[in-house]
Length: 415
Image 1: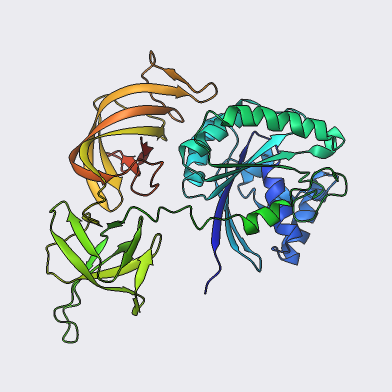
Image 2: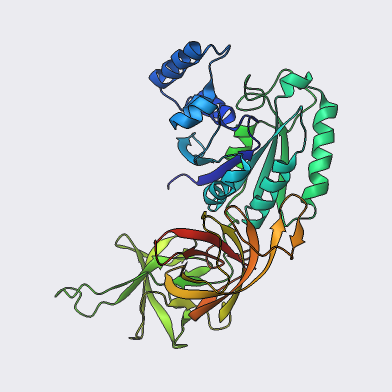
């Protein structure tokens, strides 16, 4: 059986040490090649750095290396004997909020770095809010640069209390805290000798052992049909299968199901995956379902349970992060991608913007520009089958596309 995959994202203010933390994690877990290390060692010497600058492992763009900041989302893959990982290293600047939303949208866990010298700042609030809005189940606050505050426990406790006070106002399921020094490797892969007062385990231990099996919704059965398989061959002359990725719940052979939007019902005849028959399948597996009845089903339809259906409607309230330099147009028309469904919509009403530092609603300013987050009411050309984002991150998310340029202009969460 394949190892479990954990996707996590990093966030924090500029110079809090996100890239250094990832570099240290990769280096100390022996996940980089010797020639890679020699290359960044050489670059560090050339730049006059006192230490080997492990941040260079992730800061790939030339502009990033020159400025010493992260601009784009850098993805890195590594594995340990216990688990596989995909890291999204996201930018800290306010003008790159959209990049953080992109990198964090599929994450199981968010690492938010806080500089021990500066404590909680505006960006800490911003990134905690975004992680909460994106429904990331686990948030780990890494209090970094503990070496610069003499590894004082009191500094760690003060910051932890302040974050706990703020995060208690948000929908965050699991919050953890680790005091670290990314530069020197304290509590990253190995226990710190400088902080005997902390006994909570290292960051790598937490990443390897945190439980993510229940992060997916295994209650509400949702199967957006992506493709109808009709081989038209002699061996499979009458075969009709429905391929897609399960967005929620558990499907078993013999289950009674309903097809939306038609409302027809049938039973699951077979479930297959790579020519292998399965007795059951669950999120987020990609499978092919065959039904006992020959029903007209096409891409964009959804297979659900009759007594557990999503919301069906054309008026959708969403929290949208605007990704485009051109502001959102009131009454503007956009294309929408939701699961496997392609529809068009009109911006019916911009209800308010969110001040993500104070969490207050801004109702007197309805101009939604790049990196703004706003609550918006959309009206779609045909009904969508959706759940609240907090309940299902797949059926509760959609993207807005400018039909003229084909650019993705907004990432939205159903509320």
